[in-house]
Amino acid sequence: MRRTLKAAILGATGLVGIEYVRMLTEHPYIKPAYLAGKGSVGKPYGEVVRWQTVGQVPKEIRDMEVKPTDPKLMDDVDIIFSPLPQGAAGPVEEQFAKLGFPVISNSPDHRFDPDVPLLIPEVNPHTASLIDEQRKKRDWKGFIVTTPLCTAQGAAIPLSVIFSNFKMTGAYVTTIQSLSGAGYPGIPSLDVVDNILPLGDGYDKKTIREVTRILSEVKRNVDEPKLQDVSLDATTHRIATVHGHYEVAYVTFKEDTDVNKIKEAMTNFRGEPQDLKLPTAPEKPILITEEDNRPQVYFDRWSGDPPGMSIVVGRLKQVNQKGIRFVSLIHNTIRGAAGGGILTAELLTEKGYLEK
Image (cartoon, rainbow, N blue to C red):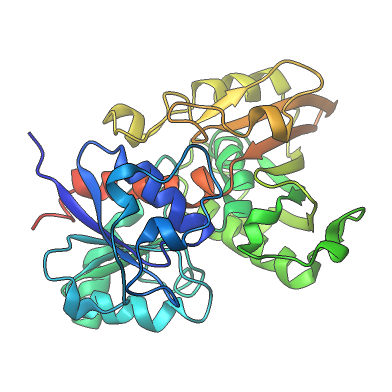
């Protein structure tokens, strides 16, 4: 039987933090043991948390005291989950890694460090080996592994299947993102109600930069075109839905490409988490819907088992002989954040990186 791993959750009262708490409470071997928060230290978790997810605060968690983000108080903690905000996360995560803690980060602060994996367990699991380089280079006993931006994952997971198996020359993505992607309390209501809010060139570029790094690490079954010859672009927007990022992609190819072949490749897509039967791995990372009016955010964001862990792809269409269109939907705080972080921890456990 696998030993229990005790987890600390930084920012445990935030939107991603509460998903970590909810999912880990039901996990077979990773359990929430330390809840860190700012502004609520010393108070019971159930008293201070705004539980904006399914169900109620778990009974066994309700009376746990919220504690400081202090590694000196975490002697018996095995792993750190860090959904801290940009800017604040970087130095805190480095402090933990220096002291020997494995850190799974949902923050952008270390996503482009060349020795830090930007990891989607089904897509580029081999990049976990960067941990060895990171430890040696930085003289750390612990390490940092990052998960990509939720928006980037919604595009990169289906695009990785296409890029791996077909001669893709370009992908042009438009995202329609939920409010929870901005955290709590998020965006002022008068900016987004009765409106579609463009997130701007900076967010567009950030999304494509992450997708590009992920695709550069995909193992391919075709030799061309090279990634540097593939044109990638995105326009990103926020709308007044609570959870679920909806993305529309137009993909072009060097040669005639049948949309049905792409559908087949996505349907059959699986990775190491499925082969290893990891607890948080959905049986199908990508679920294909044939209905012309699906996916829909309200009905499909919780798809998969565990709920919210599958990407839903639909509206697959042959635009022309060298072009297709698809729509993808990702639950941004589950697959795109907490669930992806937990699945990463499970994979690293199997690879021996979380041994005591």
